[in-house]
Amino acid sequence: MSPEDLRQSAESEVMGLLRGEDTEEFDLRVSVRAGHWFLSLGSPDLAKQAGVAGESPMHGEGKTFAEAWYDIKPWWLDDPPGEETI
Figure (spheres, helix red, strand yellow):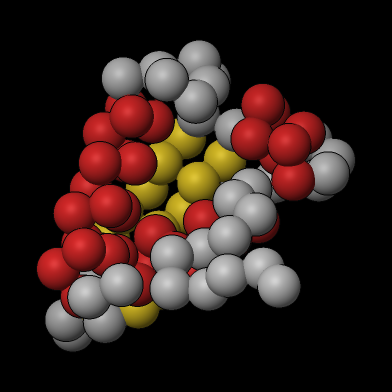
């Protein structure tokens, strides 16, 4: 997947989250420090899907929003973008 495809995919997925398409309860925190993105996502529904007790937030970071999003995303996605299960 190209960097532009990753960006568009990450933006689409986070908009789905904000619309309540994946879960009704969540806490999403986004911060940028010195050009580096940090995300924290907590949700009882998504934690259940990941097999995590409670709603412990998952953390991601990267040089771009998409990198930070996909740093936490694979725990609930079988095949992260750019990777295929054999």
